[in-house]
Image (cartoon, rainbow, N blue to C red; front, top):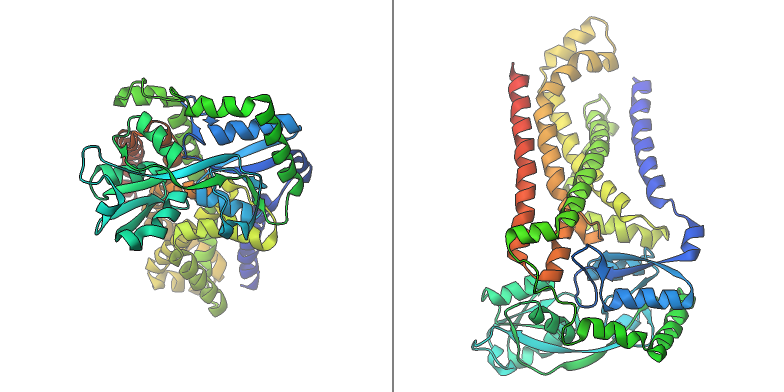
Length: 479
């Protein structure tokens, strides 16, 4: 029996060690040549994906131009604004350029470059509506985007004007909240709001830019001083040779980088973004397959620990299931991707962090129904096997597990479906799966309803097929 316990524990340790090695493995030589630069993924005209699914925008073009001028390489890592900031703080990225305003609070944890852009905050509301000035916001709800200057400005004046603040992670969600009438107005950076209006968002800007503040490139305080120095030198060169003006004019000029002339029908959006949607879908499926494989291994091992005749292993199994089922998936993903690197100083690739997150969370649920499936087998089966002289391990493998597996199979398929849906949470750490692809497309054309409808249909088709498979398996198992 001890040998059986040692085998189980060895398998668990080996599984965790494999993922740790994959996650913590870095390439120092590559880090010396190429800098990892975090950025937002949905903040046009500073960063967004064009109709060829290539990231462009003032920040993206500026960073590449400075890297070329100064003779270094960059690997841009599009993610959410909050995740971009946290990835630098945790050491996952070397710097961040994401339309980030230079503030005293941020200067406590970041070293900033010289300002590369001056922006201001404006208020936008429905055209021909009742809200045209700040004094009319009393008692109303105002939408802002998390972490932006608009949110900061709204926070600073909400008591004076008596409005309530609601925050969103994406600009398009903020605009839609105003368009549907849930919020009376929104506060947004002036160039971003102007771009949205030019793209067809049916909002109107009613105030002049205020809280004018500089955007800066940031690095973790006390780190990457050479990178910061090269950014400043490159910025000066681009302003001197006219390249800076060309980049800003490309996105902020009278015509700008507009997508308003493209086909906005459902079929038109599918044709324009077919490549991005297929790529996002493939990433979702790949994440699901890899995650469910490791989650199954983890879950089976932990589940078996819960049924062996040993109180310590039973307690360990119960504890692991309790912890990883109890933690919200979003919190677990951010803890693994940004929290652990903050403690260890070692980078964890987003894909590996996502797999570890799903492995622990989904594996905990698998462990629970493995325990349940085994415990559902009549106790007399084990007693009969042991009375025939079979040791516990052999009785479990040859008598109990074959019966328990018949009970577990439908639950395994259902967990596969759940894992497929849970991959959408991983967009928070910058993995470009199907949900994140939808956000990226919306950032460019602001067609939220149509794009989310397309994404929802893709999910429903796949989940329907898997549900049919689950029902077929359950029928076969009952035969």
